[in-house]
Length: 469
Image: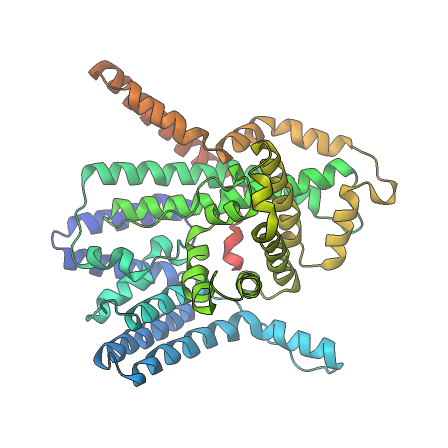
């Protein structure tokens, strides 16, 4: 089940909210939330719920073990146990096929290659489990009630695609939270806004990207290659940030305050800044639990960057292109740490923006193609390889037909909406203006929801890119 689904929007979510707010006691609300979360997760494949429960029991018990032996050397066994079990399960389901294929390719053997379905959200909740156990080892308070820990790990808002919420972010709210009318309204707005980003923008530009980048030979023109990569860069941003908005919004509706996951990364002036704004919860995970423990900026900084970005690429998928993608960005981050950042401070900001967008575009091309042959063909086509024409009628027609959506996508990828909203809030000082602003906001959100619902009913193209990870 996904958020951008008619069943979820018109049946699952309303029924959940009715039961959730009908429960007067916070403990009953938690029971409702856990029940609906497990039902949500078991919808696609019930066995995946077993894996989630194994991780939750393992890490809860290890958290208790670490607390019991605080200050003793044996407390580290709890961390080792959780990492071995959690990462072991992740490795079996996500990387065993890739590993056996690599062994066959290197040795010439014909060993059987496992074909396991990747449990939805396993990469996200595995990291959440690890942060909990490590934080308890570092001195944070452990959850004493298993049901409370299961609630933290299984909340359907952020289970399948993040943000990667740390236990400390919601520890107090598990047992005691205030659900205000203001938070519920803000959360609902965020939910609808995220739905619009996903359904109206990501799906539209994604269809163009797929048309331009799905080929057996080569793109039909230079324009098709560039347009495909550009549309995909917009698709992956609005797809993932839209889901993050919906997760944060639903959490807020139920009294939970999740961390932000995106901050207009395409407005960045460097690759370093880009990755501080993109998938923030993943970036901070690798910073706090891998980069800093390895030595951070203090020692072996460049090696630490390479290790982190190798693991970042590997986290995204069991394929050589993801590892290449990670090392590609590590290269630019090392360059920036070495001299580029100081150079950018001396030149107009526009050049930093252009450089960052170009680096990101080629990075997303690597990310898109698991077939290296198609990747090289696409990159060659972007520069007119094999004498391709500059443009073609089909691509021109696709771009013209979606020009309105493309303009909106480009504007919203910059911090235009927050600035307009801030301006509107300032102008709504008197009662009349405030009322008009409120009515306009309601009409705007209702329009987004209606258009999104209509689009979901009439369109079968609604992929969720981060289900792959």
